[in-house]
Length: 272
Image 1: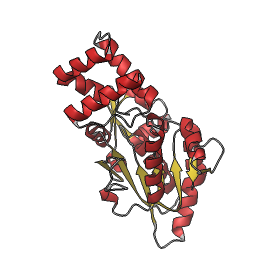
Image 2 (image 1 turned 135 degrees about the horizontal axis):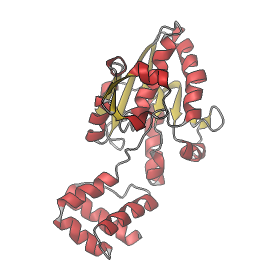
Image 3 (image 1 turned 90 degrees about the vertical axis):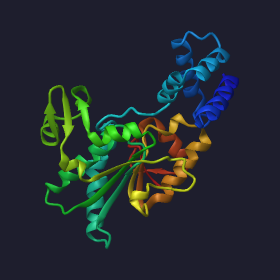
Image 4 (image 1 turned 45 degrees about the vertical axis):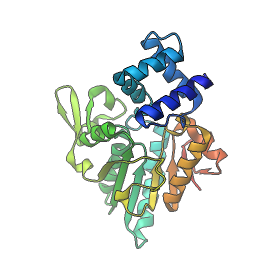
């Protein structure tokens, strides 16, 4: 499929200014093959002709390459360690620091579930009598995903990982959908940001980075190794001293190979 990918990458760059060469080969192969099958194309050449003649199909292909799946509290172990160890530790640390604010960057927020999950944990820590100041910067390269996250509206099945107490406390039910209450939204800044930007290493809204937590989960394995390294270097540069980088369960080995240290076995939470 190598030649097919090369031909496709050149065509999409020429017609739409989109570089798909950064994607990991097997992911790109599977995505491309699915589009060939959907369009009953017998060869990559035939599909490229289809792309040249059909902007709608090009849009479908590019949409299928966007990494947009997420869940509330997706990795139970990660969020358990955050809730019971990392976040309480940060609260204590900030209490003794001149900079009181906990700063978080969700670097590929998709529809916002990850960001809202963290926000719930931080708000729940407040109920224990803790004084907490925090801001979450949530970004994604897809504007449609950012708008969806900002709206915070989800079907009932999207809340399967949430207990009844959290659903009742943080969501408003309207028909078959649930909307995040404004109290959570007030702490999250959603914006469009390209992780491969050569000019910026973090979202402009955050001004100076210095994040206590950078979450880059279930993203790295979609890209080739050199692009994974670029993302990790950017995340590391934005971390505050003693900050944590969080990935997905299946990406732990990538971090370990790049000399990050896992703070708790299989938690997918790392320090430099």
